[in-house]
Length: 355
Length: 260
Image (cartoon, rainbow over all chains, first blue to last red; front, side, top):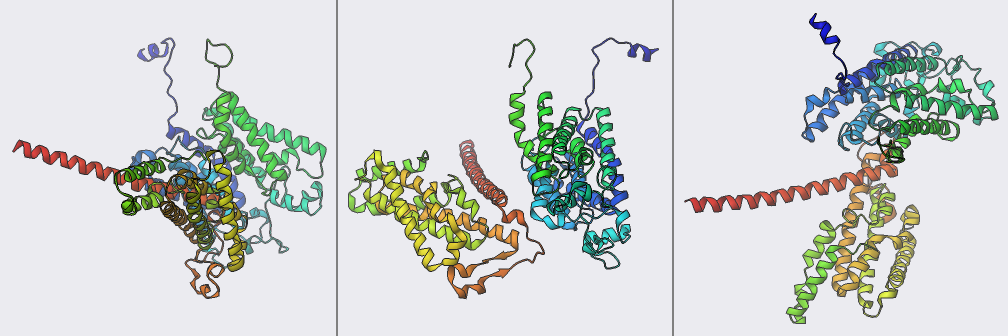
C-alpha cells in the first residue's frame, strides 16, 4: 500500500532531467540504425573508422584535460568526446587513411572544444569543425567515397578494410583508388558529386539519375543510410533528447527551396525527395544541427537556426564548389546563433512586448 | 590612430624628466635604450600586444622567406619613417600631421618597393600587393603618432628598429611554423631573396603526399597567431607568479627574524 500512496501524491512532482551522460549515450544509440545501413552498403571500413575515431577522441580529451588540470575521468565519462568521435567517423570516407581521422578528431576535441573552455563553451560544433578542417586540407582524400558495395568490383573483408585504412592497400594489394573503380574502369563518385559534375557536362537531371548509382529516391544505398538516421532521429524525438523545431526547420527549408528550384529548372535540379535522401541531409537535421551547445536555445531561434542551415545546404549544393554543404552550413549558422538568440528572447511573463 | 599607447606616454615623461634634471651632454647616456628594446620586442610587441598590421601578418606568412621579405621591408620603412617624422616634428602642426606622416611613409614604401622590384624580383612578385600596402600598416603610423612625433630622432629610429624587429620575429615564427606544418619544408624559395646560391638552403623536413592546406591557407595563420599570443601570455603569467612568490618569501623571513 505504501507504493500506492506514493503514486497518488498530488502535483507538483519532481522531474529528473537527463544527465549529460544519458543524452550523449542516447544520441550514440540513435545513430545505430544509420551506422548499420552504412556498414551494410559501405563495408567494414565504417566500423574501423568509428573505433579509431572514438579512441583518438578519448585519448586527446584525456591529454588536454590533464594539461588544463581538470578532472579527467569524470569528464571522459560524460560521453561527449565519444559522440564527437562517432559523428566524425561516420562523416569521413570509410577507407580514408588513418591520419585523416587522427588529425580531424584531435583538432575537433583539442582546439574546437577544449581550447574554448570544454563542453558547453564551444561556439562551433566540434565534429563539423573537425570535418571542415579535413575537407579544406585534404580535398582529394576526403571525397574518396567508396561506391556502395553492391556496385563494387572487389569484395573487401574486415581485415582488408583495416589494412586499407592503415596502409592504403588491401591484403591482396589493391590500392584504395583501384577499389573505387567500377567495372568499366571509371572512378565512382558519390551521387551528389556525380550529379554536380554531370550537370556541368551539360546532361539533364533525368539522364544523370538513370545511372545505377542512383536509387529510387536518392543515391543507391544513401537513401537507406538517410532512412536509418531518420529513424534514429525520430527515436531521439520520442525520448525527448532533442526537440522537433530544428530538424523540422532544416528539412522544411531544404525541401521548399529545392521544390521551388525544381519547378523552375527541373533539368538542373535533383528532385526534392532525392535531396532529402542523399548526402548527409537526415544526419545533419537530427544529429548535427540539434547539438544543444552550438545551436540556438530559444524556440523561435531554433526554427530560424534550422531554416538557415537548410537554406545554406541548398545553396552550397546548388551553387557552391562542394557536392555536400552540411558542415559549412552548420558552422555558418553557428556563427549566427548569438545574434539569433539575442533577437528571439522570449517575453518575460507579466511584461508587455519585448522583454 | 587611436593607439596612443601607454608605453609611448611613459617613455615620453621619462625623457622630459631626464632633460630637466641632467645637462644635455649626458642625455644620450640616459636614454633608456634597453627599455625601448624591451617595449618593441616583448612588452608592447606590435604583432602580439598591439595587434597591429595583422593583414600582411596573416596573409603573407605562408612561407618563412615571404615572412622574412615582408618583415625586412616593414622594418626598413619603420626605421626611416620614425627618424624622418621625429626630425620634422617641430615644423608640422597638429592639424596636418596625419597627411604629412602618411606622405612620408608612402614615399619610403615606394622606395622599398622599387628596390625590391630591382633586386629581389621573385620575392616582389610573390609578396604582390602587400608591399604597397605597408603604407596602411597601422604599426607604422601608430609608432609615428605615439612615439616618433614626441621623441628625439635617435630614440625614434631605435624604437623603429625594435618595433620592426619585434614584428619581424613574429612574422618569422608564424611563417616558419606554417611552412613546416603545411608543406614540410623550410626556407622554400630562399633564392628569391638571397640569389641563386641560396637554393641549397631549402630543405625538406617531412615529405607529405598531400599538403596540409589548413596551415597554408589564411585560417592556419589565425590559429597559429592565437597559439603564439597564448604562449606569450603564459610566459608573462608565469613571470608574474614567480615575482609574487619571491615577495611572499621575503615576508616570511622577516617574520622569522622578529620571532627569534
